[in-house]
Image (cartoon, rainbow, N blue to C red):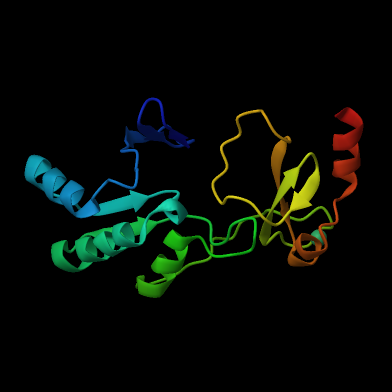
Length: 168
Ligand SMILES: [Zn+2]
């Protein structure tokens, strides 16, 4: 879990370590060099939400691997709610040494493995819109639901959606 306010990463095992929040202006090469300079060593970087990284940030990570002999582990979602690769994930797929699909237990409401992320406006799936959406409360209630590809394409909601409507 990433606690943004405290800039701390902690795990269920109780292990925690300081975290650095990434914005598009952050340069990973500079970060790695300055960390090594001040701490004497840098063994690896763990990068979360890497789907939001810019192309050049992903390329910086590659140089950290190649020129500083540092291992980089980048984690993120592959595709957005439109079923398109996030730019950061696309660049990672292009240049990463290894790719691993994590075995997540997420299931669609029908029981099939959930491979797609549906964005719902007031419970109805939408396929267009900004990739990064700031919910300012002025528009439809935006929620996300994991679905299999079949139900992501059809937009068909499961029994939970009826409950959602009834409750809403
Ligand atoms: Zn399904």
